[in-house]
Length: 160
Image (cartoon, rainbow, N blue to C red; front, side, top):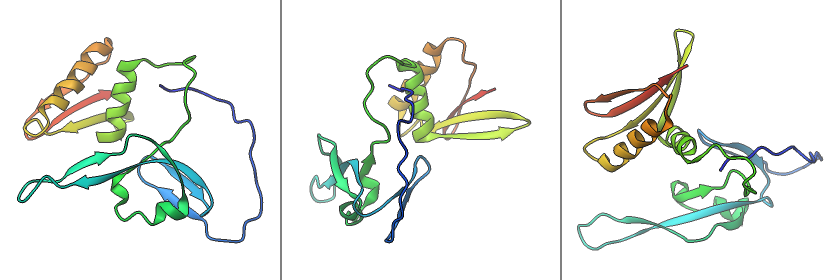
């Protein structure tokens, strides 16, 4: 669910302390140690000798200070909530939200010949179910033009 809200208030003040820049390819925010953010944390659950570990996510989101967040050893096992809850007044629909989610998690956006190209890649041999989910979303979209390459990896693109 995506919603559009107006900014109600901007707080500015002098701060004399450490400022942390939490950034990855999706977010870029500044925070002090006292700031609290919504995080969902996972841990590896061992399956036994010679077997792969499984990532097990906690059920609930937790309000955690940046100071406590910094003490987490493997930050790849942390999800950060980027927005608040929606009241349902504005929605782009499940198909568009699904495609947007795949672009954010496994996609690329390139400018080529004055046009934008969006690509989503998955391994057919390792993630056949995910590939079928992506193809199903693209087909349900309706007027979305895309190409499907099947070789060592699948790639779907839309040119604007």
